[in-house]
Length: 94
Image 1 (cartoon, helix red, strand yellow):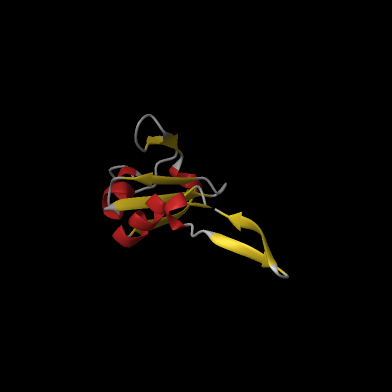
Image 2: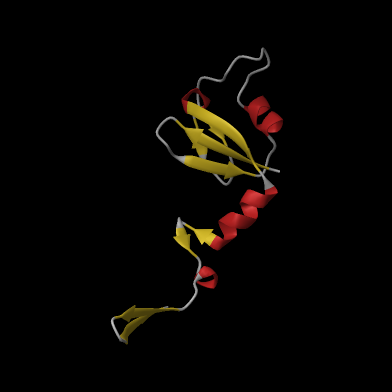
């Protein structure tokens, strides 16, 4: 299961850990939040004191994200539409 981490500056990260595993990495042996950097994945480090939100990415949401890349509609979701003005076709949306 994947976890989404949103920082207080709005930056989002997705990691291949469940929430409990991730939260455990943000605390020291006494259960106190680490005041410094921790590694997320692939050399990306964050300061856990700046985490705004942690959430689970559901499988359904992961599949949807594959179609919508960067907020844009994937070409497979387009339908060809003709634009009719008056009595003639002036263009075609692809």
